[in-house]
Length: 220
Image (tube, rainbow, N blue to C red; front, side, top):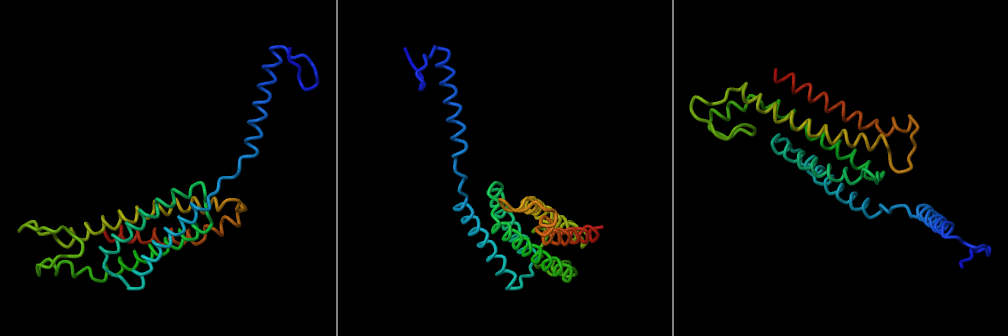
């Protein structure tokens, strides 16, 4: 014979009901008492990784790098590294990381603008390099007699490479925009606050679109 806490007799059915009731209560208490996941270590690692990318890009800006092929390679590597960090921040959404993402995107755009402006200024040099036997900065490495590429072919080849990198940058910029729109954990969803967070990134997006449009026009 089994009695409950009040001294009443427990039947087999009531015992089962009582057991399930205790289990449900335990689960509920467990959910309520589960501590919020600690993202502090992950956030710190992401911040450190971002600063490493930031320092690398800033050094290139400081050195006034103008070689388009080096800039494209540098930007591609930085964007690939940034993509991994952005993926790690999908749940965490650390405000420090979002700010650093924006700074890195500004650096990327500045490098691309510098490289593409320099390439446009020196575009006539490409044919001169080929005719003199020098290796052009951007273009196929081997030429065979009649298959020597024309200036139009060189320009088209260069444009495809640049456009591909613009798309690459645009993809990660879209991911950063999503994070900024959501904001850091617990941030305001007020439209004015959201617009403020997106302001700088919107400017970056516009600059990227303008460069892409300019490149598309140059390739026509």
